[in-house]
Image (cartoon, rainbow, N blue to C red):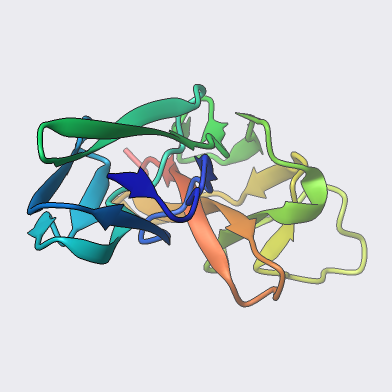
Amino acid sequence: MYLVSEGTGEMPSAKDFGAEVFFQAGDTWRAWSSASWLSIDPKEGKSGRNGIVMRTVEANHTKTRRVATVTIESGGKQQLLTVWQRNDYALFEPREYVVDAEGGKVNMTFSSNVSKDSLLIRYLPVSWLEWEDDSAKTRVADWNGKVKTLVAKPNPKETERIAYFVLVLTGERRMDYQVLDTAWVRQLGKP
């Protein structure tokens, strides 16, 4: 048994990314992955020229790159492939921001290894949050990967209210993106 193609040594952090590997097997064969984040299809076959698709089952948005070994076995011989999954991450720290009913400032913070050009912070605009330094009163639903100070207006109601934010990794086209982390601003209700 021998590999016809090298396949890929590194995969992006995204879920559902696939790569093919082709090999020649002299007998029936089977294949498996050492990690739950990487699937193999098909898992077995007959002799001859064959191929498998390695696919990321989950995204890797942790602070470490991870590795899996793919084993292809035929006729008592094994071929091992090492596959790495990158770790594009951006994490809100903390994930929940609590504001009193009287209102106040919110300084969202995060850590990331993604370039600012590829990182957006998105949210659905709400009438009770605005930018501290927004003299033109523009309300945008996303901004490039940097922290801005938000100001929560007083909450006149007894019920609390919540605004959700996501850190997004953009692709080559701005419409292609992956959600890396979520956070929320929770404003308490009037006592």
